[in-house]
Image (cartoon, rainbow, N blue to C red):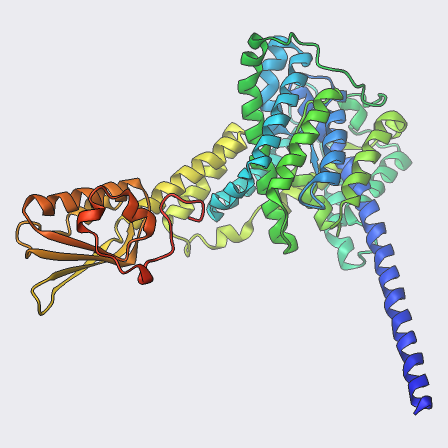
Length: 524
């Protein structure tokens, strides 16, 4: 017996060692993946941050500092590991007018105030409102963003005068872009030991340097050389006039940032089949914007393109975002000379592959299967996103249209089954939701003058949703009371009975069968 016990213990120790070794091996692979993916994301952040800062009328370093601070803080505190934040075009469009009219100091103050608003939104748990965004809106948002990413890369095929390249310069950049895309597409089929996007950038970089190819580089856009982000309190008058000036910009910036960040979180959730924390992300975005404003940054939010680069590389933890932010700062402080030599063709090819991967191609195949209203919502959101470059407005329009369509469809679903029992009492069995959209159809179901003296309206299969429905019940009971008839309202919820004016006179409800839903409650 001792012999068998000894063998069992030895075997258990061996199995334990195997598990430990496997865990260590997987941890090493994970750490390597996170670090390499973070370096790739850092390289992709450079031209984006510069471009968005210039769109906002600010210096390139303002965008780079924002990318560093936003990325670092949200990677540490955010509700979605693996998601990348930085300076974005959506934020740049909001603050450009203020930057031109009042200068960067007012922009920094606006960014701080926007951060405070976002923290307040997180404390109020407004992140859950994203559950009200339907899938057609998300599809339209993603497709529009993919088109914007693709169209923004076309500038690399133009010269300094804005004319399209021709001849040898065109073939050179086109060849380098296609080579980058080919490596990103083909390398994962051979090995996934290193991120294909990083290999593609380094390979094209080596070819350009090795063969002395004359092509546009990061340094041709702007210099990225700088120091550590300087801390300073925004130099603006602390007056009510200043608050009135910057508050509208801050509110819009906070809303745009939260919408883009929480939508990006939802998309990454679906890809990774995990669940992030929206309210935690909202507070992290707010904290990051506050730090960004105090460290000379233009602020920002989550970046879908860079997040997809990170996730597609296999990164799933916070380490990749931290590495990306620190690497970006190192580029600015110590590696500007090298990074400025990076060919834009490699980064262009990378972002085109991101655009291709971002676009929801499956949404095109469902055109004949989806309801026409959903297709319309998706197309409208895509169109507004591409044309106006206003992601928040596009999502808001999509949600409003979807809500109106939903209300219209449900307004037609209210039904009433009618019958008179052996005692001469008429029953109205209501089916479908009773709310503002279905009130008029509901009122048409009753024949007050010709009904018998006693009527029962049963809501077992219906739901009283809002105050318009409550008012409709008050009016229908008043109509019956005016002609001297008695009404029994069955299977109403407790709060519905309390809100009805004539509850003590006409309501006869079996409390044990009462539904548990509540009118105008957070549970709806």
